[in-house]
Length: 462
Ligand code: 4AD
Ligand code: MG
Image (cartoon, rainbow, N blue to C red; front, side, top):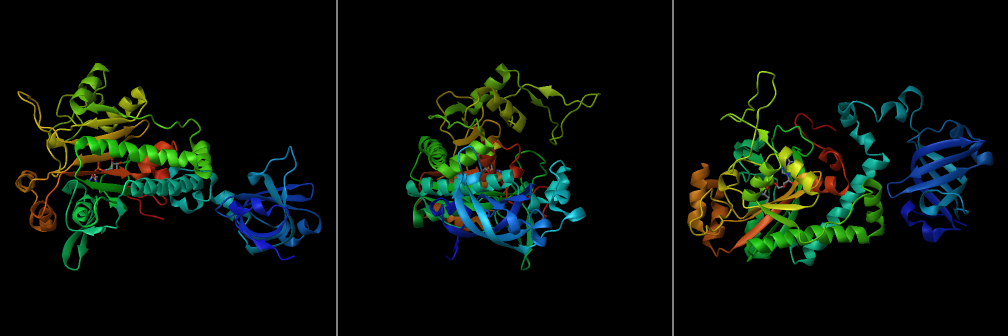
């Protein structure tokens, strides 16, 4: 009978049938004249067994890893005591090479050595992706994005695709990538937030999954120059609604993944100790967080007026206690999440630490200290900040004053300002770093492992 062409993840119902599979030779083993090939087709792995004359051809004897082959045979459930991916194997009666990969010096295993220098591995990202771990991370990424979309659409948010080429900043001029644009200056977007805000009167609550770009000279575990930014904007909400919504999105996404057999197996493979976070998330105000850091002896590097770390005569950074008004840096954030071990909403950051568009917190009578904003960062154990969100200024006079305070020329923002003029509303939103969320979910050391082709300072290849 004619063989049914199938993908490896769809084989279970075809047990006992003759099937045709195409894929890459992932593993290869010769055992007393019987060849075991683990074939990979992106959807899964399948053990193929070649014996007798099928294993005695020139092609068989010269087959190398990463060659592509087509194999036809009978799919057999494995007898008890034997294990292979999917619980079945293909007993091959016909096969052929589609694309032979080199052996010898140029063999795949000689090109890709997992212990190589990180910069060599970065150059070979296109090969690293063929590995079991890297591909599992990317598969989980895809499942995670669709779980997020399901949660967001379930909450009545509509997906839009804002532009990447823009002429306005969102998160400060210092991290803009500038480019020539038909004789004008333009930038790669830092955040789609302002565009999402313009969608509220037209589409209601909205979200996007879009690349954001940051020209930050940060060589850290959690910074990329280009990252995937999941952003959402909601109208007629208050600050408490915003944090509750973020919490729901995260928890519903995790629930969807754990309920799905394929996605939950990926989580288990990559992060065996993963447990779903408990709601409600801990909420800690910025001012209380500063106190908490000092109570726990967590200090930060002192900087001079230019932002350079002050060093002592031995070259060690001078460490000082945190004061209200200080930024809570990555290291302190990490210590905090390491000790507390749960997701933490830090909220109410001082206005001078945050972007121009953020709504100020109402001040209680007699309250002193900095003017704080209705802003929140969600910190996750092992990663730190994965979400940044806030309520936005809804009053036009306040917005115009904010441009002025930040030294922003309001001219190119006319379309954004118009939102406050033509039917303003209380609204807020957030941005979630997809690679950071994935680093938390899949327990990856760095966000570089969570991007298909990561970009960081100096790296735009492959
Ligand atoms: O905190 P950020 O800068 O906030 C915004 O851009 C807001 N305009 C978002 C909004 O309200 N719509 O960035 C949001 C998130 C961060 O919490 C972090 O997870 C991620 O984006 N992020 C980065 N991820 C990787 N590499 C970088 N360089 C990142 N910068 C921010
Ligand atoms: Mg932030």
